Amino acid sequence: MASEAIVELAKRRGFFFGSNGAYGGTAGFYTFGPQGAALKKNVEDAWRDRFTIREGNREIEAPTIMPEPVFEASGHLDTFDDMLVECPECGESHRADHLVEAVTEIEDAEALPGSEVEELIADNDIACPSCGTALAGVTVEDFNLMFATDIGPGDAQPGYLRPETAQGIFVEFPRLKEYARGNLPFGITQIGPAYRNEISPRGGLLRLREFTQAELEQFIDPEEDEPPLDRVRDVSVRLYPATEQQAEDGEYVETTVGEAVDEGTIGSPWVGYYLGVAKRWYDRIGVDLDRFRFRQHLAGERAHYASDCWDAESEVDGDWIEIAGFSYRADYDLSKHDAHGDDAFTVFKRYDEPKTVERATVDPDMSVLGPEFGGDAAAVAEALETLAERDPDAFDGETVSVEAAGETHEVDADVANFSVETVTENGEHLTPHVVEPSFGVGRTVQTLLAHAYSEDEVDGEERTYLSLEPEVAPQDAAVFPLVTNDDRLTELADRVATDLREAGLAVAYDDSGSIGRRYRRQDEIGTPFCVTIDRDGIEGDGPETVTVRERDSAAQVRVPAEELAEELAALRAGGEFDALVDRYETVATDVETN
Image (cartoon, rainbow, N blue to C red; front, side):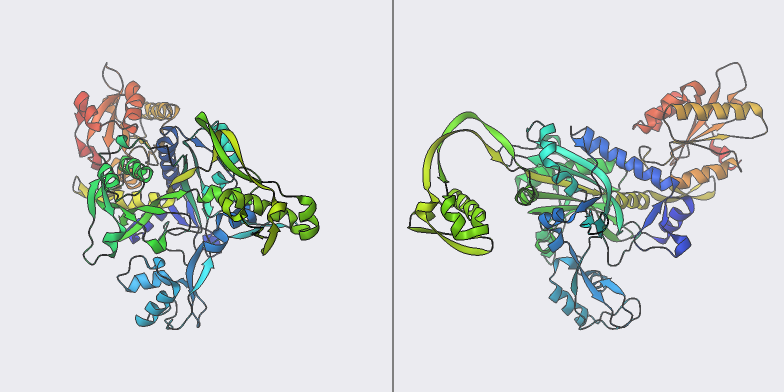
């Protein structure tokens, strides 16, 4: 959840706010203001750096609207549901599992069947949050979360706004494998919007109807490809396995990625690898690791495609929120699209040496099947071919039974022309398995704001500041001329700001109010460094200098103006401010209140 302090600061300082306020607002939609948009973009860039560039992956950008057959194949039309309960008095709709979680100690009610949730609503006398009407006896229904639309005018093709970015990668696999030259493993990433028609949006950026995902689909050969686990083997992780969640005295498992994989706590080495990579990345961008864990999905809450799934969760105002999911999707997605689509969703795996094998085949006599089965003849022939591969013994009798076009058909074995041939094969067609790390960008932004929010006292004055990492902070620096009635100061301040911007840094320029107030404004939006131009920096025979103030400590050093851009770029890239303190003259901080 988002605390009142964070929501107030976010709105006042331009991080995020409810959309369409002039028309009464629209639940589940938020606009990122100037500071929030910059913070969000920096998070996306940091994710792209780690999960695309450093992993050697490729990025695509697919459409956000896709035709209905895509989601028939993926299973979203049948299984992408949440539990809805509608108040019989006021007509307001609510997430039934959320109502149960709010009044019981159950953390993941969505893992329960609807009938059990109905019983919990009745047993706990749960009422409608909007009007207070008792909800006992009201049916809990499945509600599909996808937004429907029409593609084209007139007799349009039905389509849906994508509920995840992943399907845009999966449906383009036949072409993407060509770019990878058919070699496994390879990874494809995508950052972009997704849409879910949430029943009851809530929690600031936690549960939106339009949100941004950053996803990686890693395609692997399950028999041969292993992750570079040694890179993260020693990364410490706090795990909350399903067994501990279900135990009365369940506890966290404090371990390392290597130990968790070796002991089977994490079932897939690939999932373990990405948990380790993600843990380091979250530390890099400023997530408080004392308020962070990996929680394993219970069997009832796993997505329809996942054989195992872990969530990265952060603690925000006493609640644990999911900020990423790590799923082993096996060959579910590609197999589904291979069965429904018109292209091949496999790769050809060449053997080291040709193999001689016996292969069962059929050569159905269509001159017989056609008159006998009419329009179903082709389907019957295809069913015979499939059966020969799967169960050659089925052709031992005088007739063979196959399922085609929704019916059972009897075919004479002689008509099927079954045989076993000896063939030499150079390889086989393999359906890759998929490992998916999926990150919620908005939820990560909300976590960073909550974990960075700090209050302290500087020079006897209380202040609020965001202790954001320089890499993700909305502004890299702010430039202040100490006074505005001295042309020499303002000219140098203008030149410094221009130089920093030309060096690629995001810079604010502020010459309004006392220097202390200017510091406070920048502290509150998380600007890591403030540059002040004062008379001491332009007087004397030496080079022009400026003071650089570090946000968290309020410590200041005097730096030559011509070296400033290089020094700030190094700090943004991960350098330590203490290195500047060691090299340059420190400045007393009483300027804070001047």
